[in-house]
Image (cartoon, rainbow, N blue to C red; front, top):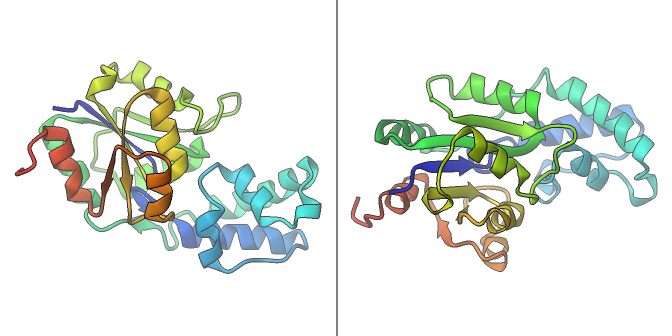
Length: 221
């Protein structure tokens, strides 16, 4: 039986795309740059806020100074609108409760900045016991670098063979591969299933409850 499940946040536990897109469009507009449809942000997120801003800016405007300016506007707006539209995906709250009941440790590994990750988890999953809530911190590489997974393993000591890493993107599958833990790609998030396959997901699931048999090694659970 698996003892630790590490979840990506955006596109895996929470549908955050509308709030992320609206915050980015607000920041772009405030700084005088064109905006995008909310649907287009599915392919821009996943590598942290700075990379999101870089992808949203016109190519000729992607200097570090411009990215930092727009990022500041983004964070100011996003911190006040974290949960305007954001909510857990169907089945996720029940899954997390079931994992707590089974005694499986649960953790979050996100490229979103730490303050936002902690706030979102506190607001939307107040009754869940977490072993670790890890967002991006200055000085620590972003996923797919596996440092965030190693940080979680230091807080929740677990043999790698007893760990599942669950995410919705190629970045997540690559993070799991580099950390040498088993990966689970979810199809309800922001990226297509082809991306999960192309990045060698060990498992691909179509609903949250399908995680339980992977943990218990019992397909009839």
